[in-house]
Image (cartoon, rainbow, N blue to C red; front, side, top):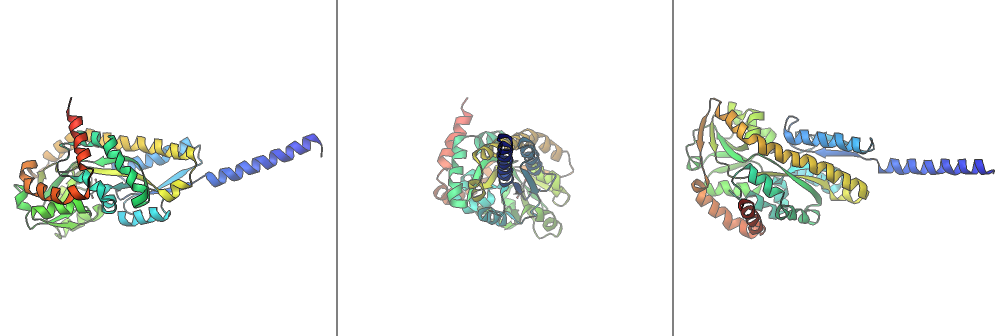
Length: 329
Ligand code: 3HB
C-alpha cells in the first residue's frame, strides 16, 4: 500500500473511531419535576435543556417532563436511583424524607423572608448537606433553587393560627411540615401540588400550606378566600443528577452540566427573591380576606418542632449560625 492509501485508510479508521466515541458520549437526558409548564422551576429546567444542547453543539439533549408526568417525587427518586431518570428538580420534601438532615432547612422561622432564604441557600453550611446525597439517596446535588415563603390559604375564616386547630390542612408530603402542623393541632393532609385545586374545590380540605407564586398560578384564591400571611418556612428546591448516571459521564460533561444547571438554579433563587413583594401586593389587591401572623403566634408549635428535629437534623445549629452571620452587617 502506497503512503497515500495507507494514510487515507488510517484517517478513515480514526474518523470512524471518533464517530463511535462521539456516538457513545452523546446523551439524551431526561429531567423530571412536579411543577406545571408555567412554573419558574419548569421554565428554568427548559432553559437549562436548551443551553446544554447549544453548549454541547447538539451532542446532548434534555427532555423535560413537568407536572408529575413521570410520577410523584418519591417515584422520581426511585427512578433516579435506578438510573432510568437522569435529572430532576425536587422539592426538599421527598429528599428530607430520605435524608432527614435536610429537614433542618424547614425549621419554622429559620429565616425571616425570601432574601434571607436565598442567601442562606448559597452558603457553605447549606451546600454541605449535598455531601450526604450520594450515599443516602443515590443523588448528586448540583444546587439549590426555591419557591416563595410558605403561607396558609383557607376556605374558612382564620384570624390567627389557633383557628387552624382541627382543620384539614393540605401539606406537601413531608415530615418536618407535618410535625409543625400536628403541633399546632391541625390535621395535616399530604397532597402533591397538582392535586390541590380539586381537593379545595371538592371541599376535601379546609386550608392549604402554599407560596404566593403557586397561589397565583393555580388561582387557589378562587376556592379559598382567606389568606394568613405567616412566612413560616422557606421552601428550597434542589437540582439533582442520578449518581448512577453521573458515574458514566466524562469530566468535561459533568463540569458543563454543573455550570449550566447551577446558573439556572441561581436564576430561580433570584426570581423568587425579587417577585415576592409584588406577588404579595397582587394578592392584597384581590377580593380576599387577609390576616397576618408572626413567629410569636406559633411559639408552642415551634418548641414542639424543635424537640423532634434538633435531634434528627443536627446541622440546624450550623444553619442558624449562618443566618446570624448573614444578619450581621
Ligand atoms: C407545594 O406546595 O407542594 C409546591 C409548591 C411549589 C413548587 C413545588 C411544590 O411552588
